[in-house]
Image (cartoon, helix red, strand yellow):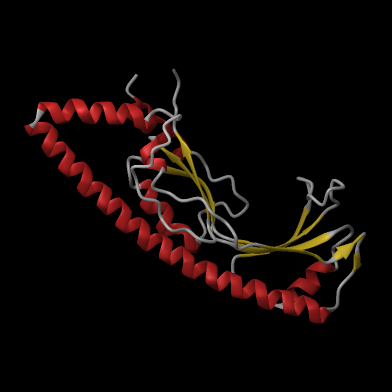
Length: 232
C-alpha cells in the first residue's frame, strides 16, 4: 500500500475526530502553529497545549510522582493572580502542587526525514508543592513569589512559540523549494529519480541515523515528533 496515501487517510481520520481536551479546542496561542503543520501533507498534530499554570490536588505514589486521577483546582493559559490561587487552595484536601507547563505539541510525521525537521527539547517548567494533607505549607508571600516566576515563564513561553512559528515557516518553505527542485531533476534525469528513490527508502528506515535535515530551534518547548510507520 502507498505509504503517502495511507498517511493521508490516517491524517484525515485523526483531524475529523472531536477534540477531547478539557478546553475542547486548540489554545489561542497555539492555533497558528497547529494550522501551519496541519496544512502540510507531511504532518498532522494529535494534541497540543499553548502553556498553562495549574493547581492540582492529589496524593503522590510515594516517589513524588503525581497520580493520574487528581483534582484540578485551577487552570489558566493566562497570567495568574495570587487571590485566584488562594481561593482555589480552599478546596485542597491532599497534596496541592502549583505547576507551570510550557507549550506542548505532539506531531505525527510521514517519514523519518520529515520528523527530523522538528526538535524535541523542554527545560522551561515549574512544579512546587503547596499543601500536605490539605494543610498549607508555605506563606502567601512565597506563593506570590512563585506566581511572579510562573507568569514570567508564561510570557517567555509565548515569545518562544512565536519564534518557533517563524522558524517553522522558514523550514517548510525551504522544504517546499527543495522538493520542487528535486521533482524537476527527476523529470529531466532518470538517474536522479533512481537515486532519490534509494534515499526515500533510507528515510523510511527507522534505523537510519544519518541526519540530512535541519532541526528547528525549540528551546523550552516540548515538540514531540512521531514517525508514521503504517501497517505492513
